[in-house]
Image (tube, rainbow, N blue to C red; front, side):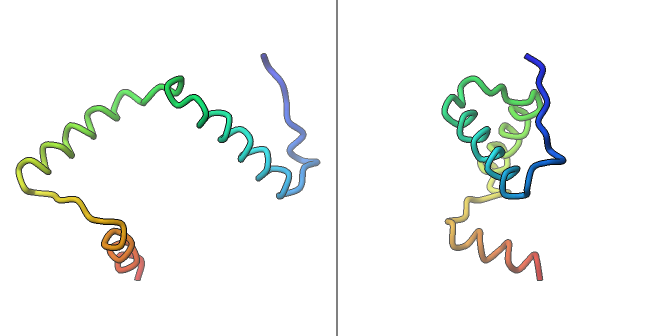
Length: 72
């Protein structure tokens, strides 16, 4: 069903609202959204690093701190 959205006539607020509505609709049925083919490979590599002790999980506070330090 091809259609066009009048983006040039829309305000920033209208565009953001449209994005939020589309995202909410997509998020309501995540099982219908295919994962990219490379995603399984990335997850397997991460699991391997965890099991080998080369990586570890961070709680949310630690993760936020690490990101903030990288952004400095």
